[in-house]
Image (tube, rainbow, N blue to C red):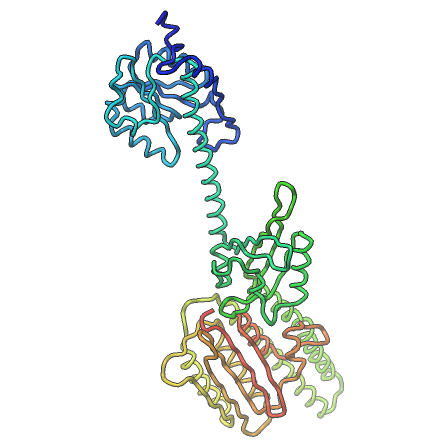
Length: 507
């Protein structure tokens, strides 16, 4: 070497042309690096783990043009944060397993180590050194060659950090989607009517019962017989026009259970503005829909029934204040007494509805067999002339259900069948069956005059001031079944009425 300043300008193991071909390697653009990657080459740290001598000074001077330099002489320095470590033979021998441990801590990110050997140590590196380091540089080394080789290693590290951060971000986003408290689906946009699913999260499977076996299918598998045509047409139009849409739709779970689904769908576009996918969000709003209908019905009860009956009481009370004869007084008192009883009945019905439907769903089951036997005995005690029969599944096994309010709904149907039957000996039959695995059906059949059509049509069409149900009991049955996602049916003919409540045993 001509001088100490020239030591880093002599390439070891190669000629000057090779060094020129290598050129001044520029570091990667780090603007998009992840959180753990250096934002620029100047912020990348190079650790010189070697004796404090002239070689270290010259290496620090050469590499300091591009990197932040850290120095150390013992293996403890490996605990620092750095992006590349250059270590001499002594430090390499002293580091031992600590070097491997440091690399493992960095995994899966790439953390490079470079072994420096002196010109006179041609026999080294020895015995598996290449298995523990990523490059071996003989000193003295040319400045440009040194920067090139270190820069290549730092670039590999920053690239791995960037990739690791990208993967971490993707995993975070995927975990957020997987664990989101709403159902999430992604469907591939297609030119036809089908937009096949490419992703669905855990909540979607919990909500619908459908899992990865439905990937590749269009999400219309959630639709069923009672799904509204207008709503599905609204969704289809929004997809065709590639615009967002939010609707409330009646859907069906994999086991056939109904539920009200709040769906929001939005297009996902690529950099060119082309719609490539649709993302959908699903939320069970069955409870909300039932509460809204209850509010509607209760408002009608307060505004219509209570007002009319109070007006009736007030009117007949005014007759009593006048110079009424004995017959008028008797008739007025009878009307007031009956209307007061009606008001008490309405208040009791409202209380029953609220107490029944306000109970939260629970895993605690009841034995429907025992509940119905007790119900039959109570009805016979209240109405000795009524004939109540019970048909249960064969055997003595419990008929376990967790349907909120089901025994109350059945009792409401049985008692109404007896009370509204003018026959001397009303007949009511309660039949329980298992129509399909996991489902229970209860039928209440009577020989009474039947339920007027307007009492049942409002269940689906909704109430108005002119068209409404006179009894809250039928609403109670409808809501209990609706909350469980089942089917409610009323069949009336000249022979009487059959009410059918079909529900999943454990909604």
